[in-house]
Amino acid sequence: MRKIILLLLITACVFTNSIAQNVPAGMKYQAVARNSKGEVLQNRNVTLRIDLKGDPSKANVIYYSEEHTVLTNQLGLFDMVIG
Image (cartoon, rainbow, N blue to C red; front, side, top):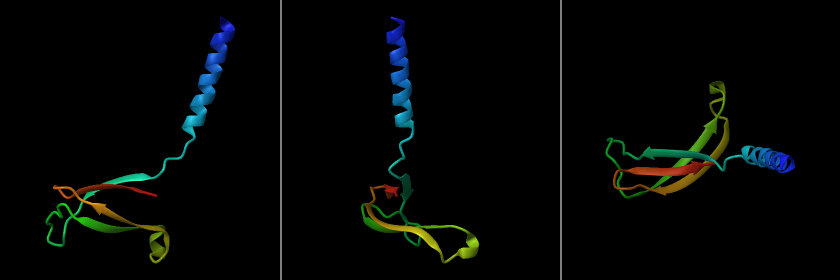
């Protein structure tokens, strides 16, 4: 009986460690799209460019960039995964 419990405990520890070390697929992002007047952009395709920059003194250096086209809902809300 003790051997079975010990085996289950070891299996649980190994399984937990293998799951805990997985890297997420990306960063979830959610926002409301608005035009220059602040009006919500409802039910529209919106193209976004995401730029990740580092040190402010190196303002022109972009370390990562990607584009997404998303569809907003009736409230102008959209979500996406960056990365």
